[in-house]
Image (cartoon, rainbow, N blue to C red; front, side, top):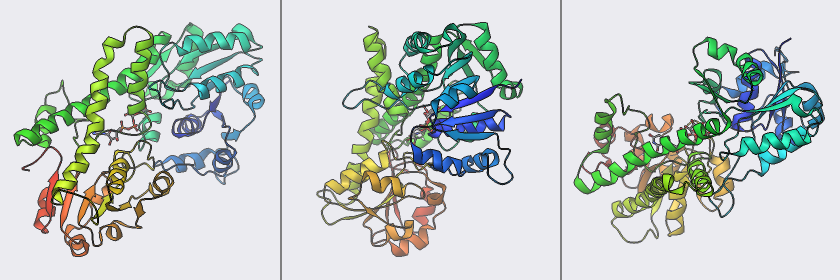
Length: 447
Ligand code: UGA
């Protein structure tokens, strides 16, 4: 009989995973503790912007015309426990307030609520990003709490999806990593992932700590790559070099590769920043803090970028105060194709300039509502054109396609001064200069 699957937590990770499991042919029951989310999902609506996810959801959510009906949602733990053979835990693990460590309270609560109801054999699969050692602790907790005792097992299966590509990354993962303690658990997960494995996704079997570490190591490596190129950008600024050319040239070396070498205002979002911090905190607890002191430098290079963007703006405006200056900010989200503004470098820069007296007007294609909620005192405009009208300087801070497709000549008619600073190294300098703009990017003083 085909496995029945539940997904606990319906954020970016869980909602996408639930829809993807239904797409792979499984019967799926999703659970969340937030009633509004469950109501939306049941109507086939996605609580955040993620390309392709709503279509996939509507294809499978029961009760929607023409759907397969394989996907349902509930708030009832007993129903979930009764329904599932495999339970994926997809709740978030934010940074603890005032600390580097990660807040495990949502994972702990989810596992406890579920375990208490598990009266039949099941595999609980953790997908959340957790400090190494959590799986071992949670496995013991499940054994203590589950009425079915040893018939319930835990596995760890980290997730590598990127926001903006969540559907594609979940249906066609570049690797599947499973931390297991038994052949039975491995066999069950091979069954769950038979389709992507059949299509060529590598399936890597490990122990618990390795599976947990793969995730934090991968995000640390990505953060390191970005901060490396941003450090080179600082040197290029000082030496008169061009970091975009430098990245292109080193990227041809296959050992280095061209990806994740775009210099700019740095990384943000709900994952990279908090994951490297939680990793340092955990290594400290384990007595291995020296091994990760370099991550402190990665973090500080990254955070410095935001201040450098502010200073570059000040300089471009002639130095001195921002008082009375009109600053148009294009982009609020931490990356394009997402409405996520968590730890967004763009909003951070906008906020700093605003706090120093600048009149900041922000426009973002999808992130306006979230940005307004987080920074209600910033000015907002309904279009790039409206944001740019009368501006003394335009800051390009999130590289949406919409901004690359702007017509610099038409925009020039609206701007107070034709001055654009590219915080993402993503616009074409030639195009903007041809339309009479002064174009300046980070790490490319002469480009
Ligand atoms: C990241 C990882 O890429 C995923 O593999 C991982 O699954 C996910 O975290 C997670 O842990 O859940 P995501 O947060 O969606 O995914 O964003 P990324 O695409 O990694 O971008 C992170 C930040 O780095 C963005 O602010 C982006 O603008 C910045 N970035 C990226 C650069 O500044 N330069 C680059 O060259 C690439």
